[in-house]
Length: 178
Image (tube, rainbow, N blue to C red; front, top):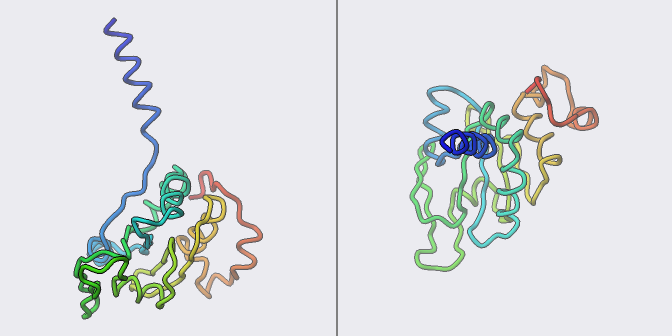
């Protein structure tokens, strides 16, 4: 009986031990990046956004996406309607709509250039410069090319690889190359 229980536990553990994205707060990601530079990925979402939940389940829940993200990015979950005060690069960002419904946090508005649409993902480089903003839901297969193009720094002019050429040749999953 003991062997059966042990075997069942091992099987159950193996089935649930898939890779998951390690999410950080914005402030944590900034501090981690200062100590050990990596690009920053920000999922800008709201609690009421249905497509945000689909993104979480299907795309961010994909083990290959999660493994790549954890290796190349500090991933941030940022609620665009949070009331938290965030200090970043000498600025203080707040949600000015105290007590209001669906009011937008100033950091979300800044990251999305005022184009408030959910879900939206943001990629930043190690110097906290905005690289790419992508709005709308993407399947893992649609999301992966953006993630790898930015994660592996293919956008760098010294690599001489345009997005058009990269996306035509891109194959997912990357297997041992990620």
